[in-house]
Length: 463
Ligand SMILES: *Cc1c(COP(=O)(O)O)cnc(C)c1O
Image (tube, rainbow, N blue to C red):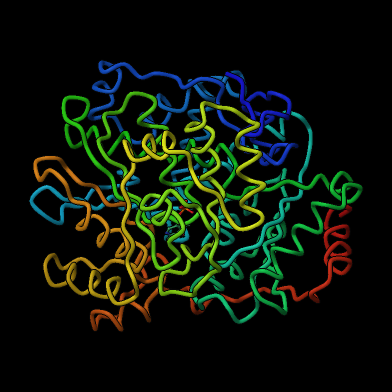
């Protein structure tokens, strides 16, 4: 299996190379050259398997010769051993034919763990074999950074630096980044906002000499291996609800479009998914695209579902590539137009988009109301991102005979203030994390200055 760039001007790469590279050299995102197919009998055979074995069967066709079977099974087993639920991603019933898919049983209580834990083990296996080390650097507004630190802590082949805006992440998020004590992971507080952190990371990547010197790599949401890991739970959930004999719909709280694109991948592989509902908060570029065909940037508004506060969804480029018959040149043109504000989809592309995807948007009041209603009707306490999903699932419910699964992307205790304000209950951290507020913190401070940051990283690389 080889991988191609959405912009058509970068070399084709193996799974291993695409994973280590992240972003393609032409600025595009990697996708498999063809979609592996799962026959109905193979999908049916997933019923009753444990999550790790299902993950093995679903991901195997994509990883090529990067891993032999035992290696891949070992990677999956180590990745998900840190989850506190034997089912890894359990389903919870919240209505006659409505379900929550709980993706927050990993170490940082958000769905990013599902992909990041796997990627950590994949990097370690590949790099050890190659006798190489990499430096991973990322900027975070909260969930991604802690998931990366948890995934790589204590591994040998990677040093991880996560930049976060000082004073602008929640206390739980900060402590999840600052309490791991392993020397190879460091949380770095930047005197600035999230955009400053991102700009610093970009500066470092754009300095090609420095990039080669410390073997800089990224694990952000455009990394193909992350999307692949997320494809698995669409299969396990649909099969538990009767696939392949029955089709299932999913509603996905969406920011960068990575999670919902994984659902699209499952559908392309043959899983009978009826609708994929894009749920946005008031940062609704994708909802507007579905409604009008116009994909236009409008700035970012802060909300109570901060992990979805984005102006542009980076993984949407992958879907565009598919909608445009895999014409790299056409993707390049739209991405150029997006830089100067936005673009309009052709009527044909818009119709194809609407055959699979629906969308709905929740404003702040609707998000809070969804938290309160879910608590009243089911006794479940959901996080604000999940609540955006539940609102959208109601708006776009469709045929009541078809199961609707809403992805629960974070544990409510990660966002206790918003949840308490909405339903009057202050969610508590799971028991295994109850001592988070007692653990010692370790933070490195840097000036908002690329040279200072490079100095710090060089020091780490040579020791
Ligand atoms: C990252 C995140 C999302 C959005 O996921 P995308 O893959 O970026 O669309 C939704 N909810 C939570 C809690 C997240 O951390």
